[in-house]
Length: 349
Image (cartoon, rainbow, N blue to C red; front, side, top):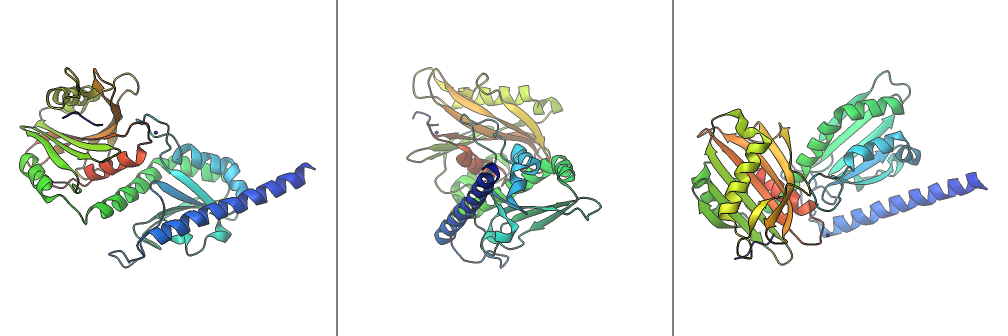
């Protein structure tokens, strides 16, 4: 079967008020819609279930000017940067913002909240971190600083930490949706073949299971998702190198994942978006190398984004590369890719 893988001061003051009102109105509509379409049941820790769209952060400011100043510019630079490895430009997070005077009970249920507090009386900047403060899952950060310049300095120092924590909350939320309907058969097969398990949602099935290789697929009407697992004995740290990971993926994909036409097969795209690696320290298995980029079907016209994690299985001293991919032609794919990323992050030994 073929692989399936979008006067000036008066005018300015009036314009700012109109824009501020529009922002509050828009955020309110989004929250009311999300609130009415989500369950109001309590989470396991007794807190209300959090609200908000996928990969969305609510920025709480003291005034609208902060959003247009270096404070807002710095926040957008890091939180709304384009996510690497997607065929269409999409930000890591979608940002909503409002003034603290409008930050009422409904908005406090947002899943990801970032609060800005500039207070000239402060002697130094500080970061406050709260988990599940008003809802669950929820991540809240507050930076208090004596000036805008001090805010920018501390934000730029900690921006990777903020991004990682917000991403973790997103993955928790996705897995909490998936877990009521797990594919026990696929999870058992994975455990038997590789010595670990993951939360495999219903809809995925085992498409191929060979020695040191497994391919799980989910075929929906408008998109496809897949999970690929590669295992081999761990011998040297060079196996964590970008070149080694790419070579393993391409070897197994060519051998086990054929395309829709004769001579076609799945491989990694090495030209359009070059695969990029980085070390991640928050992966459940401990030390891991993340790789992002695009896959394609050689000798055909299919492709999409992928994310992979390479880590050691401590039970059998084997190196594992777990890769998740998405196929959805002419559509934006960030959220679907985040789903397979969340599944990979559920690894348990």
